[in-house]
Image (cartoon, rainbow, N blue to C red; front, top):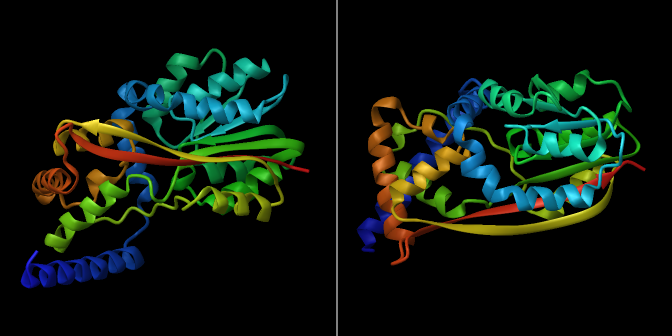
Length: 295
């Protein structure tokens, strides 16, 4: 890269940071709405695109959680109900699944409605409406970063009975680092195309999750982290997969509608140029997980 190109890149990143900062501070909060819209649109194919690929990670957390028979269970960010149903099967109770996406809840109800109860609500709002010490198990799989994590964990701890357990598995802040870099590089070339900043709160590491559990009065029983890499044939296929899995929920609304196709096309080029290999374009999901218990 020439000195001129380097300067243009630095200047573009600076302009992007300024615009993102202004949008973050001044823009009305629309994260929940945009994320819900994304998940509504992918609900029909979500289990095929995401659940089937991540089920072993989710079930590893469930095994460590080891919910007892008869436990009253709440599954926050339940999506299509995969984990909610497993909680119901392991405990012999009618587990409650909570999600803000109507599309995901419709899929959950159609598949698991006979065994589970599904509630349309955001995770924090639902927990705040629950009585203290009214549940034995609370889970949150692949959704904590879309909430206010500390507040959700604090409320979950309040809702749990003594000896109750909280199980979490989620993407880390550095999940899809390659994708985030490519997105930043793309918008740095045309900062005015950025219209919405989606305010995620993914945690950076398993140790931070453990610290949050302890700060909220829970004892950490298990902690883990890991990653899983996928190959797509093209940069455009990366976008398609991210959209289908919900891993980039809200990303499609980041650009102004008139600029969206051009932004996506350039993003695909950047992914291929920066990360492309003869085998395809890789990207990595990095995750963290924990089980906490109320003393």
